[in-house]
Image 1 (tube, rainbow, N blue to C red):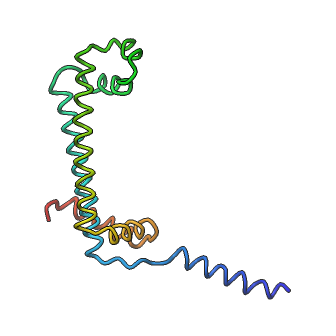
Image 2: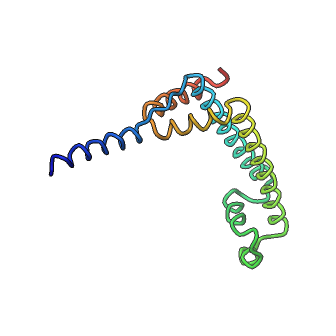
Image 3: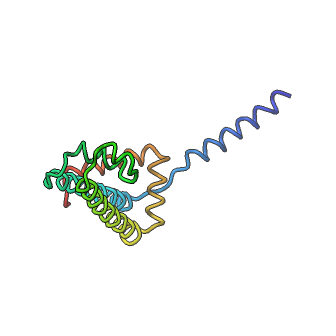
Length: 154
């Protein structure tokens, strides 16, 4: 009786292992395109973050810590009053937030455009899934990312 269960357990193990270790074939070109998109969007995000920080610092209305504190409560008038936020500060936080929303929209649009027209949705999703499930592809991806970051523009 025990001998009949062993082949079933071994068979189930093989099927389960195959299901989890299905390798998705990803070409270097596909991986490079995907990594380029992710790197480009990351650079855009960093640039936007720095520009917004510079905007806050250069206006001289408040420092970054004050902006962060007021930004958390910008839609709560009683808390703004408690924090002694001036009308000028409130207007400025709203101005920065509007600029941030504009940048987020621009970045999302670029991301979608690149994913759709440069990589294609099928390849994009395939590569993303492969990176998440296959350690070898993740290793190749990480290596490409390092090369791209060390040699921007190539």
